[in-house]
Image 1 (cartoon, rainbow, N blue to C red):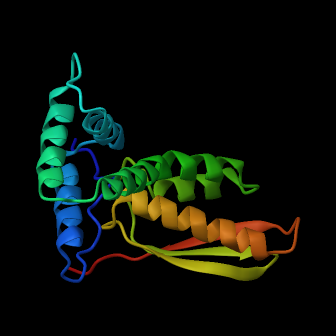
Image 2: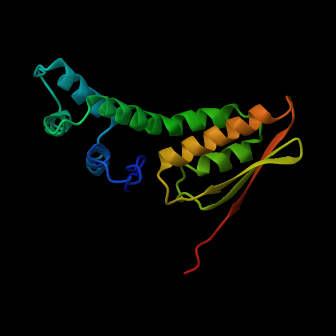
Amino acid sequence: MQQEKIISPPPKRIENPDANMEDAFSEFICGHGFTADQVRQAYEHLLDRSAPAETAPEVTAIHAEMQRLEQEHFPLSRIASIIGTFQRLEDAVPTYLHFVLRLPITDGEKAMLRSLVQGSTGRKDGELVMIIGGQSACTLEVRSSDDIGTVASEITDTLKQAIARAEPHQPITFSFTERFERG
């Protein structure tokens, strides 16, 4: 079974040499399936300027790419930003699942919410509606084609904002209308 893509490179930006190098580096990381931790290790080695005693081949490959970028005068602070973004996206699914677990909703609603980012039958496309105190608090479009980290992060952020705006102790419920592709 193929592992689902957690992180996708960010969308392309307006022509800017640094932005182009940042996009290319992000695509390099995603294309090889490197983790934020591996990128962080390579970055620490780059800043340390010493060759580590034992390094995983993945870290060595990332380090070489970082050295190439540095020779092209790519700002190292941008690499730190990229690491932060990838770490946030990698952490998004566990954060989302923990958030769902703590919501005061039924087990069925929790299972439905979990299925949006994980599921043995595949992820779903559709519309998620959060209802607080009988009123629609927010509506989200969920697309299975989006990477899991982005979906989890967006849903978590949106639901937290809706809960923060609501009156305390109001009942929370969810509905999901699945959209099926015609083909």
